Length: 193
Image (cartoon, rainbow, N blue to C red; front, side):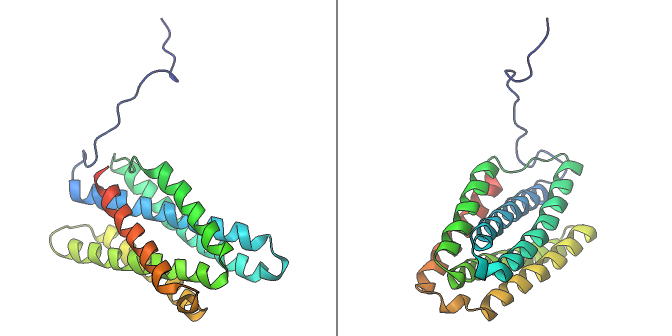
């Protein structure tokens, strides 16, 4: 009897079932974060590329999306190599991040930069926490090096956003607070689900 793979139920692998639960959690969170970053920049690029006078901005968001895709590919490889899975929320994060990118871009260039500044601020702090954790008891030099490099990339994106008016966006304090809260919630959820 032939089994139809599309109807066969596949049991998900529980989080952290590999050799090191904490490392698996780090990778799952980072994979989710980079998935979201790619989605945000993809959404912002989509809006600004449709405006003839915003092509330079669309190109910048395209470059930042490409940077984040490099990070995402690295975390996808790490998950695969270690026999771990991404968060079960990955599809939701992908859709929500694209919507966030489109929404902030529709609010204007400064709001899009405010989104970048808020997201990248949370992510760079998160990478630093992971670096500190690896320094205190986890012998993972290649992973640490990856975190250090990716943190520097995120700082570059954040600084670019600040230099281009992120903090001058209308409603900046509220917009930044909401995005920051959302990022922190996504980190906690991705760690466990």
